[in-house]
Image (cartoon, rainbow, N blue to C red; front, side, top):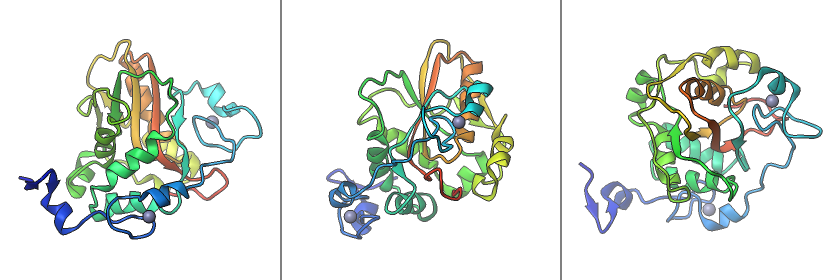
Length: 235
Ligand SMILES: [Zn+2]
Ligand SMILES: [Zn+2]
């Protein structure tokens, strides 16, 4: 049971939130560090993040008829967003989900029309080891900006995949295709997938395929950060 005192958990009182950028007390990423974030500037494919000279879709994505329509992301996978993601995932700093949801929300267009948020699931074993799914925590916080249901029992990852960070761009697509199954009928539902970070978009595409197979009429995604397209892939 989580002990709550005046709306704050015991863990927050004993270990108060610390800014992942400057270390100041109070918030996961403080307003000063948020204001210093540089948005991604390099033009790239809206689906796979490949660098482009013009347009928003690369030739490969156009020919392969991607099922993910658009990956919304505003900031590069760099300090302090990168630090916040790593601390959330590997040091159990769950309060950072709120800051990362705020960062992700800045990428969303005002006109976005979705019916539900679906966090990218972890494999059962990885979720057991970590004790939580970071995407689920971020999705729950994102409802402050997008007040729609979070469907976290619809999509399952029925096998643990090799961590994407260990793989080349091409191997990432092979690694995750077929890894997801949607358990429910999604006819006519417009879905926004939620994840912490996306590099090639392969994981999001694999999840989108599973949802579209069950009738979802539109699938997009929002993530807190993305490696700039001209950098080495990480994670
Ligand atoms: Zn700060
Ligand atoms: Zn592309």
